[in-house]
Image (cartoon, rainbow, N blue to C red):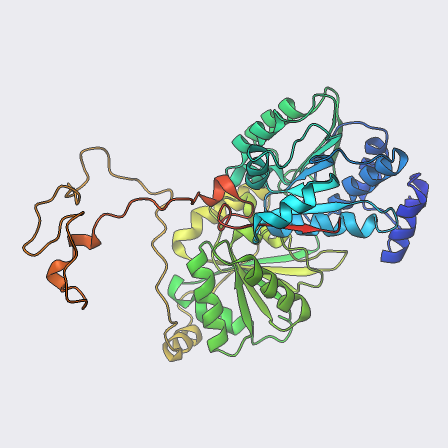
Length: 480
């Protein structure tokens, strides 16, 4: 059996691996490390939880150790692009752990704090920079960083980059990279758009490593589907947590609002829970993850932003409260359990209107998931009747995939900007009423009045990592 000591890694790396208790590489590590150490480009097809971060971090650090030189000012020797803040942080922590005896600098730029700390960390030059695409483009535009010094470029979780709309920013970033560089490209699945991207980024004849067929699920995960009415999912979830074996559970929902409602519902039945999604601040997300890791909460309720960004050992179960619209996301969700050689279980709830989503998942994963019918269950009916209402607004109806009216079939809408003013209505620019008190109902514009776009804001998908919140406040994590 291959050992890390057989791969020719630098002694400081072997010492760091021994500190971590790692002796035997995973299949992707054993196949990828020698080729990357030799300077070859790499195309890696690997599911989450297979150890691919070490598969690129170790040989990159080895090459940096062999060629010790200062990083160029306001540039980096290694650039790793990651789709989410959580995943970027974990990649940065891995580089820091493996390179602890090498004296290298590592910085992670992501959403959550102000620009000043980022600029300060980037100014002297960084050996390893891990970044989300939108924020990196911001720094390039502000001339606080240049990519001219990048020797190795890593694109991690490429298919999730596609799902989150980052392919155009990635193509834009690649234009700033030097032509002579090593490229490492990782993806759990290989849709046609991602396959096209590989031909644009990778040099000819890259080393190809595939440790599992595309979009298959980890064999150690015990999977099951429970058919249940939408309105009884909450009672079924509470019933699952009556099992003491549900010790550390990630629950996935489709929407941010849904995640908050499910977390509140669990709290109402005595299950400690926290939610994590794109509308949470970086501090809130970090506290929720820390509490989950420490065992202060049994349930972490998350949207798909966290499907690949959470790397926590000993997750006993993954519950899919709602099936994902993208079938590949099912694979990434259940990949949060059965990590580091452990076993795990995955439970998916399926309402009648989600049957087609289940068919798509089984088609993509090439398996028939064992199912159990809990519809018309009297016990669930009695339980949901006894439960109090969950505070907060209900989810908006998910209309994705439904037929939309054709042009001309929509109900005609009044133009609020040019409507005739009501009696007592003050035109924009007219002097405000005196008297200081609240305006009367008649004084308010119909429909709340027109509100233009806020200045200085940008959309999350185009500006920041990790979905929502990007482009508002961005952060940096550094050990420079």
